[in-house]
Length: 432
Ligand code: HSE
Image (cartoon, rainbow, N blue to C red):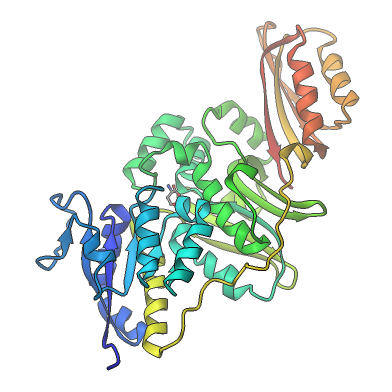
């Protein structure tokens, strides 16, 4: 007999889990209509089933035993929202081996263990969908996988962490301190359980790994990606950047180049005219260039309870629709035969640079600096130095033309050894 209801179980009743429960309740009619079948959330598992999340549940829905979901023959879809590697990997692979469809928002997990997850999914003839893992509510995985399927992806530049974007926006617009802005982002429910994943750039790295694998082929690993976070960014540099017409953003960049793929995460000065410069607060944006489509921009809320729940439910509806129509799983486009790509070391990349030297204010200083820069093939585009009362230490800010990163690093190392330099030099990459 054909099924008349698709049943789902949820693992992880935190911020996003609560959003998913609310959306299931508040949009039940719409979800059923769009799925073409009744979709019901029947079980929720969490270690803490006492805390009041402000949602009313039917008796018996809550459990602390994950087997009530992953070993439950009644459940078709397992929604994993606990995050982290362990024990999520075990739960997800067991569910897949049991033939369950899995929906997850766990970017850390899928970016690190995609091969294991894929194998489990094949073993159980199951499928996994992860729209909520990148860009919160923005349908970027579906956009890349389906909407842009006919394109060779050439470049992705993205703001992928709501917490970092919120902090940088608050520092830029409200001149707020880093710590106060982080606290606000946490209170609003954007941050990871461990916010160092956000501010040190690793959450962004997990997300660009997922996007890069979908776009450029397999073989891109966490270890290949150069990562710098936003901890320690000084308002002084945000201000100088603004004076020069730039806005500071934490970007993930993945780009096809002659030698392979260039993938990295670090703070960048973005020109004020670039659309990414106006993506503020918890909003995310993903710029994608395809060979046929040209430039596209996906924009929306990249973090928070309801935007992320929206992406989770989109996967649930997608799966339920397939189940209702009797379609076989439609996995993400298979990359099984995709080429292994070479990831370019950061030293090989070419960028423009913002460099702030802290030097004594006396004759010949500029000559010493420009001498070293020139020796390393670094050409200067503009300079700011403001007259100050004290001559012991003055900031001198340079904007360079495009240069090779390895040359810049060598030059800065040499300059930092000079007696005229009073503090470690600060460097940020700049995009055009
Ligand atoms: N901590 C993440 C962010 C949540 O701030 O964007 C969404 O992945």
